[in-house]
Length: 299
Image (tube, rainbow, N blue to C red):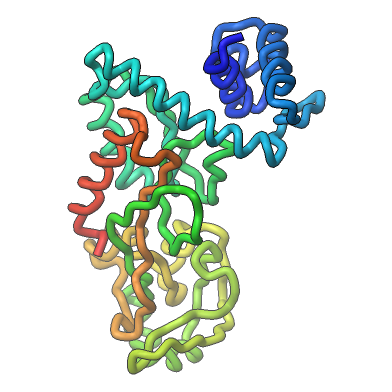
C-alpha cells in the first residue's frame, strides 16, 4: 500500500481512538482500516497501537510515529495546495480549546469572525475548565492561562491577566477594607479552588514573594460561584481579572490590596505544528493572537 495512505489511516485511527471511528472519518470500511494499520506495523517492524475491545492507545513508538506522520501529512497537503495555487485558503476541520468563560468571552467572537472569513473550515470548539491533552483529544489550538512547562508545542504569548482580590461594597462597608495581606486573617475568605487549590495565597510585598495561609469560610469548585458569593456580600475572594470584568465595571465588586498582587498570569496560544503548519492552523493562530492582544482586559 502507499506509504502516505497508511500514515493517513494511522493518524485517523489515533485521533478517533478507534478503528471504527477512523474508518468513518476516512469513509473506509473498518476491515480495510484494520488491514492498513497492520500493514504499517508489519512494514515498520514495530507495534504502534495497543488494542482492546473498547479503545486503542499508542505505544511509545506509536506516539512518536504519530507526531512525525502528522507533520509529513501536513507537508504533503501544503505541497498539493501550493501546486494547485490555493495554499493560502484554509480548509478542513479545526479543533480549538479554552476554559469555559474565557472561551465564551474572548475566543468565540474570534471563531465567528474566522468562519465568516474562511467558510471552508469547520471549527470544533472545546470549552472546558480542565487542561486538555491536545494529542489525545485531537486538539489543534489551545488557549492557556498559565505558566507553561517546557514542551514540544509551539507557544505564543498574547497577554496576561491579573490575579485580583475583590469584595462587594456592602461587605467592605461592614467589615472594613484590608490594607495589608495580614489583614485578611480577620476577614471572611471565599476560595475558588481552580485558582487556589489549597488554603494559601501568594502576594508580593516590597518586591518579595510572601505566602499567607488562610481559613476560608467557603470553598467552591468553580469561579462563577465564588464571584456570586462575593457579590452577595459574603466575603473576599481572589479571581482572574477577566472573570469579574463585568461586576467590576458595574460596581458590584471592588478590588482590594492591588499593590500586593502576585505577578500577572500569562495567556498563551498553543499549537502542535511547527513552521510548516497548515493554513487553517496558521491563519487561526494569527487572527486569534491579533484579537487577544487588543483586548483591554489582557493587561
